[in-house]
Amino acid sequence: MSTSAPASNKFRLEAGEDPLRVFRDEFIIPTNVQMKATAVAPELEDKPCTYLCGNSLGVLSKRSKQLVEEELQVWATRGVEGHFDHPYGRDWMHIADFVHPLLADIVGANESEVACMGTLTANLNLMMNTFYKPTKERYKVLCEAKAFPSDQYAIATQVASRGFASSAIIELSLRPGEYTLRTSDILDVIAREGASIALVLFSGVQYYTGQAFAMQTITSAAKRQGCICGWDLAHAVGNIPLSLHDWGVDFAVWCTYKYLNAGPGAIGGLFVHEQWADEPIRAAGWWGHNPITRFDMPPVFARIRGAQGFQQSNPSVLATVSVLGSLEVFGRAGGIRPLRVRSLRLTGYLEELLHASRFYVPAEQVSEFGQPAECKIGVTIITPANPDERGAQLSLLFLPIGQGVMPRVLKGLAERGVVGDSRKPDIIRLAPCPLYNSFEDVERSVQMLEEALDNVERKGLGGS
Image: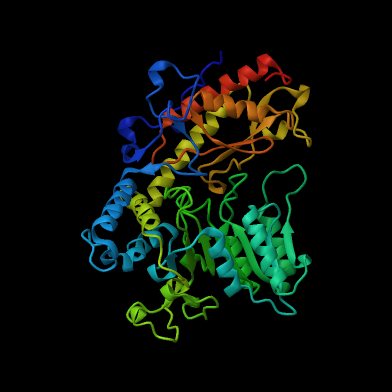
């Protein structure tokens, strides 16, 4: 059996020092038995599992459940009249408007600069249709190599649709032996190639490593070179503080089912800086028309100024109130900034306990092939050590690389009621979310990780 990692007073808060811990009660966390955790003690079967997977899908808030159930009842009892005569004062015609001020607060924007609409990749294509305007001299797109596939696909198809070859895409790769991009390398490319770059497009927080990019610095550098700068905030929104308006970001897109806890496949969002409030809409839809005359069905499109002019269809009410419920919890917790303080403590505590594990291998001791000396079974962290350069997530690399350690550890964690997610072949991502995770969750996750690694070590690399 493994030994428990020592508790620390540097990061860990006791109940009386941790006022935000009460918001855990605002969420429904699956139990161990519901998650089919077969190796937990019987007395723990009906206890909440250790859910550290909010970077992939956040848990259900009780407020979201309540709002969805209310809307189902309104649909059942009021039918189409719910668009204009709503018993809870949330008429469906204006349902997204209840979300917009809360989203604006989360991303650091004016209300007119955000829209609750669409899905992540649909919104990204919509934004690129508008803001990627290549010319003969300025036509390139700067992005990261191995970005999330949907971003890669969107960029590739947008470039091809303008008649340019794939060489128009500058994919910035990692330096050999490193796991994250250096800000200096991004800035060097912008300085060197800026005159030919039409669009700079990165993720706010990198999905694989958890690296938080220096958004303000990169945006400023891009704009000084005359480039449009956009951001995919799928892993950043609700995770780290954002100031999109003040940073001068041109556009951004995001989903809401990760740190915003809006549910699987939930409605997305986008940001368009107010400097583009009157930018022509290249893919106009009925819902982007001035709401005063929308139901008059005029033949000529009269856009809403700002981001909401990009709306195309009326939003899914059930999906919209689901994100509304979670955002209301964010509001009661004081917004993203106090939650970020708690997030730093939770993730710092997770990092500290991992460092104390006998299985931990410092990243600098991992060879260029990813195997430590003597090929011992172990784990290292590929997420930046600097808290300012990461969000809640830590990405764990299991060693030796390519020897099937990660799937066995992931299975062992699941059997013990710890829910993370994986990226093949060797990465498990754990993300303690400040709205609903506890310091006890962090402790248990490391204890169960050590047990799972113990099991792999005893059975050997060829075991099962």
